[in-house]
Amino acid sequence: MKNINYMNYAMVGIPLFLIGVGWLINPDMIISGLLFTIVTDAFQLIVGIGLFIDSGYRDSYLGVYLIGVAIFFALWIFIAQTWIIAIPPLLALYLSIIIFTKAKHAKP
Image (cartoon, rainbow, N blue to C red; front, side):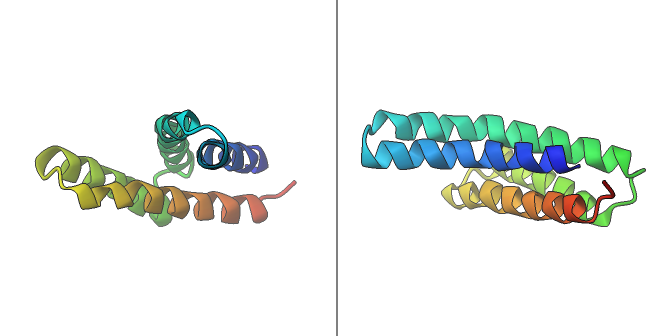
């Protein structure tokens, strides 16, 4: 679980780093950082599904996360408003907190 936590740090940190470098040095890196968020979201979705299955479908926090992902995609497909771009960062933060908590309480 701790390895997943470290990998999550990297996957969330890389886009932030690229956007920061783009803001300070090379504006083209901002686009790279924004595109890398797609990889981060895919990683977090796969981890979320895997952890939910591994928990025997009993972890309600992961269930809420997956319902949030489903609602985001439904809103994206059917409504397509600009305000829904705020949902993925919130979902990423929520899953990061879940992973951190699980890693902290995991047995070595």
